[in-house]
Length: 543
Image 1 (cartoon, helix red, strand yellow):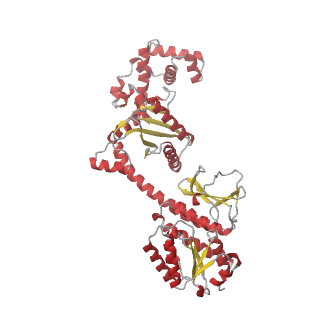
Image 2: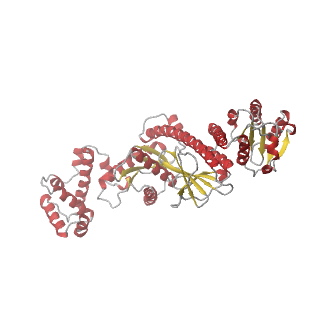
Image 3: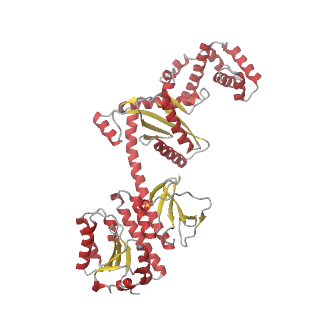
C-alpha cells in the first residue's frame, strides 16, 4: 500500500509539521522509516526510508565529517528527512544550513517538527500506513535494532555510552528511563532525570504480550521494572516510569533492543576492566613483594596506577572467612562486594585481589595516631561487614610508610598481623582488627620461622602440660587459656566454658600439680601466655 510524503503532511495528527524544502517532490513514496541516533545507522539504510533526526547523532562531528554523512545519504536514495531542533549540537546552525542546501540541491523533502513531537509516534503512524500490524512489529524491531546496533558500534567513541543508550530509548518510548544497581542506586538516567526507585514487595508480574526472556514487573500503577543481569552475579533494574506516553507493546520491542545494547556495553567494560586489573595486579604483585625493577620502570608503573611516588601509605590485608559452604561464583561475588564497599569508604585506595584475601594500599596522613587508625579501620570493617553478612572479615594492618618503595614493608607487617589474628583467637576480645604496631614482643616471633628457636621461648612448666599424655590434656589447655584470658577469674572462666565453678577450680589445681606453675607470679604467667601463643604458631606452621 503506497504512502507518500504529501499524505503524511496532510494528516491531522501532524498538523504542526512544516515543509522547509522539496515542495515539488512531496509525492515521493515512503517505503520505510528510521531514526538517526548514531552516524553508523547510514550503513543499515536500504533506500526509500524517511529519516528522523534531531542531529544529536552528529553532535560532536566536524563540518567535514558531517559533509561525508550527507554524501552517504545521497547514495541511499531516501524519501525525505524530518528534523527536530533544540538539542545541544556542535555547529548546529551550520549543519542545519548544510542539510537545507543538500535537500534543495537533491530535490529532497525536508520537514521540521516541534521539539516536543514524538519520533516514535511518527514512526508508528507511517508504519501503520505502509505495513500490516505484524509487519509493523517486525519493521519496528529492525529499525530499533539497527539504531541500537549503530549506537553500540560507536560506543568506544562516546564519553557516556550507557547514558546514550538510555537517552535513545527515552526518545523511542517518550517516558523517563533509568538503570539501577542491586542496591537501588541510580547507575545512569536518560536526560539526567533521576527518579527515586525501590522495588516494592507489591510489584506484580507484567505480561508484555510477546515472547520475552526478561522478567517484567509493574508497581505503583505507572512504573515498569525489568530485572537484568548485566554484570556477573549482579542484578540490575531497568525502570520505565509512565509519565508522558502510555506504555505499549512497541515500547517493549525498543526496551529489548536497548537491553541487548546495554549487555554489549557492560560486557565490553567488564573485558576492559579485567584486562586493566590483570595488568595492574602484575604491577601490584611486584610492588608488594619488592620484586626488582628499574627506577624508571617503577616510576612509570606508579604513574599508571595514579599513585604518589613519595606519598604516605598504609597497607591493609582483608581475610575473608566463610560461614558454611562456599562456591567459586559466590566467592567472586562476595569479593567484588567487599571491594565496592572499600572503595565507597576510601575512594583513593588501591585494591589488589589475592585468592580469598584483599590487599588495600591506603593513602594516609603521616600524623595519624594509632587510635585514629583503629577507629577509621573499625568504621571501614563495619561498613564492609554489614554488606556481607555471611562473611567473617578480619583485617591485618601494617604501619605507615613514606614512599612507594616501602609499601612492601607495610604489606609484610599487615600479612603478619592477619596471620597472627587466628593465633590470637581466645587471647583478645577484638580478634577482627589487628595493627602490627600492637603486637609488641610478638613482632619478633613473627619474624622467626625456626621451630627449635621458638620452643626456647616456651617455659618448662607449660611444656610439661603439653607433654601430658592423659585424655584430660586438651581440656586442661583450653581451661588454662580461658583462665588467663579472664585474668584468673574462676567465675567468668566457668561461665565461658559452660561448666561449674568447682570444675574450673579442680582443673586449675590439676594444672598446678602437673606443671608446678605459680599462678601468683605475674612474670611466670606472662611467660605462660607467650608460650601458649607460640604453641599455636607452631601448630599453624605444621599445618
